[in-house]
Length: 245
Image 1: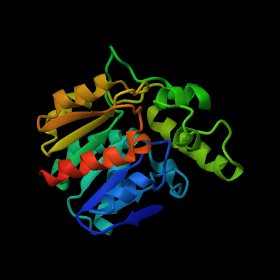
Image 2: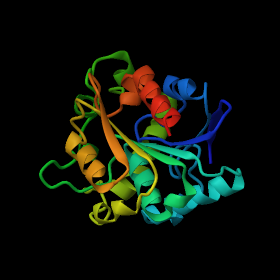
Image 3: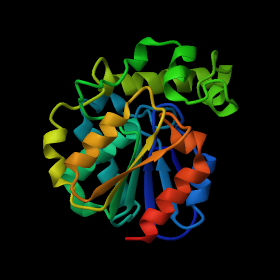
């Protein structure tokens, strides 16, 4: 697995979204107070080996449990964004005791019939930015989802879409997840971009209802990736939450 790592302090494991699988200013800010681990999901560029053996979410969870065991990461704070948030929620439902706390950033995973997540895989780059970002023409948005990826990034983009599609084709959710959210027994912060048109805020509220020890904070002027659009605000809220535990 490709791994980005930085900082010193309590361990914080970040499970990335399917759009920006790399170290960013947001991670650098967290690394001022925590040892941040950012592994690249199996199937994404740099972590492709043996991905054909991964058939369901459970495979990803066991991969990360093994990852923590190998690197001696004991009860980390688990932060997951978008697709990574879905993995994080499934992990916390099953193995809550292996974690210190949980932070979900615009997490996929829940089926909310009245406010379904959009079918992102059927859209072109421009339409995807419209759903993902509050300011779809801002530099950060165009860099994350360019109209035409640079030659050196084409393979990475294709691999990311293929890996995401394996788990989220047509339905980016687990219809059984919501019924088991009560099993999350650790302090949980749910961060949501106020202008997320991809995974509506109703999903964040549903996570909040299902997880007893949780609270929701919305990030103004941000879409589905507030850690990309508002890294300082996002990192500040997370740090304040963790300091209060």
